Length: 529
Image (cartoon, rainbow, N blue to C red; front, side, top):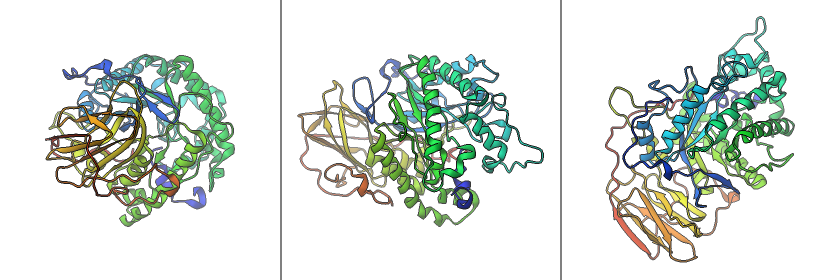
């Protein structure tokens, strides 16, 4: 479905690889990337450090799916670029129709291509979320996702197909979704078999973070019940179906994290009732919402005034209030698995909210930018100034406050240390410090070499550790006192929460040059799919 929000959200009366694997670099160490798992409301690594995920989507929706040289599927060159810019995760699209093109028969060659991409990304320190993607439910309606054989509903005589995304309102399409939620003709059982086979294929592959069970699920004929305040009855049925798929995955791979996405009316700011009745009790489940701005998308895709994006902070503020309510109720990790969609002006609405809450994200969308022509880096323009960030990738302790100003590169982070046997690791942006950076620490010591791309910090005691990174000559950032209170969050207009002032005494000082990449800036394939 990709951008159903921008169309349906505007109608409130109706609806409110085998890849080109080159040899890994000499410094690559595949065994260094350990599997992540869920612990409470955080993702943690094998040492017990809290991991923050910054990543991109890479979704190939068309046959022959995840093939080398198709101009979509990530390659080793893409992985090197992403890792260099500090991205530690990729949401890799897979589809039911690719997994099981004929009834009951899983395509093992496709599974092998998926596993090869997972392993290649892992060699560059990148974790993979396997996203069971759909847009429009099935090719039956001109979409993708569910194979035609898995559904009996078909457009009726004279039923007009208005195309994406309004085909979601076709009676036959609504009936197709009802087949899924009611498990008519065993469609959900077959999907469970396919996802179970995928889970089994990546069992033991440390780079496989988890499986997102279904992208942007549409409620079918129940959609009107979701407006204006959510649909607890549908969400109860939907949760039962997600649990059924979770059980199918766990039967083949008990260790794999499973990600649940709210029904897609969430994108029109409807709250989710997942975890309300009943509660979510299975271990290893994470929440995978999206954060899109309908006014911005109307401006981008429908030619409406660009000033509409000024409304985004209000709409996305409500989305984050819904995330806060869900987190308080359920207490599992959140990973925003889609946001962005080409409007750089609204990126801070997601990024600053996420920083405040120590929530990870994956930008929509990255497609391969390496071909036979010159090498192109899409992250050296306005997009990169926002999404390439200085941030703690692994925290040896309990995360506290964090701020980053993309205009200046000023960064500050406070955490309470715990003994894990490994240091805290902070990636230093390679686009924000053209003349190097300075790092200062209260309560700890810098243990990495001067100018390192990753700053490592060891606590010197049991008290809070605060890390400051900034350009030479900058006064740096000031952290707010205490912990973040979601109830006090305000609309985001830019680099909220970043101020200037003294960072206090310094327990460790390092300087060095982290130069910006030499590649020329160019536009990337980030338009909505």
